[in-house]
Length: 277
Image (cartoon, rainbow, N blue to C red):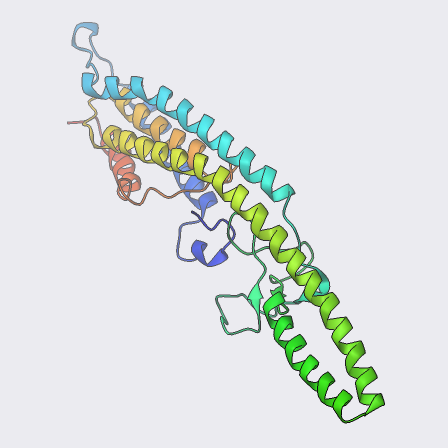
């Protein structure tokens, strides 16, 4: 299951806006190549035709894109639903975080988490809060406090006995608060993740299907400007489905799309120089 909020995952990856900007520049080059090709007179009888294999692949792309968009929409609806039900740990159980969790893993306590995984970033706070009080830790405090209480009672030390008795009562109240939060969070998390697991694998499977199909388009030889346009549109559809905006399910084509940028750039340059030959 993906960790949607861990910022470290974004480090070292290309910025989505830069990818879109670079592809816009490529499309400007495509437009220039198209204009240049349009100025070359050709006889109607000798006009080149596009590779039929590439035409067939282009025809199969829209249905896959539609499948992906439906799956993305379903997954996002589930994530939005559970984000709205996200419980916050009570203040008496938490302390402010003072750096990113992965920068200093040995911070006191545990990072506050989302139901579907990832750190909970509270509005107005720079870092995720730390849960520093748990029912288990308070349980140990109660155990030791009760031992001290029995000792004070045995020694007939009234002042210590009353102070310790008050402390035990406070700890029991804190224990109840911690246990209530932990139980509520665990119950919601189980239901949320069970529902999310019905959607997330479907989305990932369709992303893989789309990536393979776009890769096939990019790898198939194009014979004319029409083929170049088909490839540019395929990349545009990939960005539309998997881009971080507006869907929020950013995905990089690691498995099959590592050479897409180089491929489209080379194709644009080839056509700008006079064609596919």
